[in-house]
Image (cartoon, rainbow, N blue to C red; front, side, top):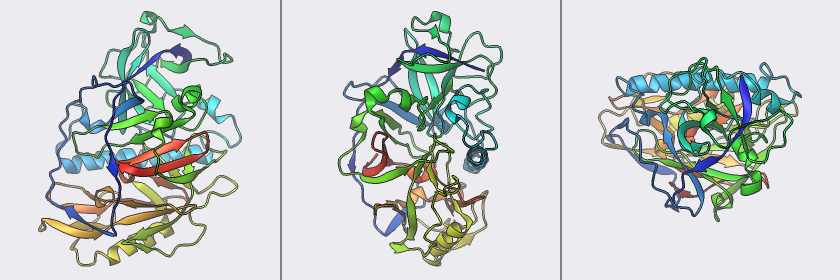
Length: 420
């Protein structure tokens, strides 16, 4: 069980550079670009106090994570992804938490379950916990309102990279009752936990509820934050920024849609899809959130591959296939049913794909965000999949390298204007 308590959190600070974002209707993809993952951790000591920023890294950067080859890595990631989507669907359907119940309170006080079972643990931050601060790796999750770490005495703990946090050695540790008014950052302290996210100490929930890390910092940040997810297979790090500086001038802003059944999740209004600058014919209501809380479109950091309702996915996929008919096809791999054998190519020209959002903004993705290598032999797959329900999920592969900003106070999410 989780016990609420107070800690002081020390944020690692640094500046990130940016430049203008623009992608054409067609793009050249480098087939021979190497698939490299170093398995080494970056230096987190480079800081600058001009804004509150945490550096993000993908789970594959951890030395404890090893795969025989890229094919093995992909299948492991897709298994996690399938579990993640199933967990989201259970939560929203009410099978875990009944519709109309006090979701955030129940979720905060629940048992800590395996992150692997729920497919969590794609992106990590390094954060100082307690006084004096003790650095810990924590998973970020935009679909959770929980903030917690493993704590001593640990009756049942999974292996983590850093020593398990000992609240007895923290000057800011204070046990609080469930009715206590939160003045700082309340965190859960887990003493009985089952197998969790690689080597992480716990979870940094950045969901839309009041108990999430973002919710508790509203007084200091105005509910504003943004992130840039690092591209897979690279040595670079991304960023998670808190405060008004996370809201750039020139971004394309889309209204957030609230689902009372699932207040932790960030829903957006999506009206259509495009391939190569051509909009795909789809029913007007295919992405709508119903009055009963079904359907809709969620943005999620923990899901890798974007899921779309079956009819929308089929039309979208067929539109892409029609514009890539010149490329040799390959058999489906894992959850992907549209793949290409590009082993004989140095580079290929492919159409880019676009999301058409409510009130006009169009987000066009670079080729690397939807045509991904699935082995070491030149097989590439269209990185979208059908959803088992009417719910759509915009996954982290499609968000990679794009500046994503949330204005919680005014209810908007922004894209760009920079890439990172």
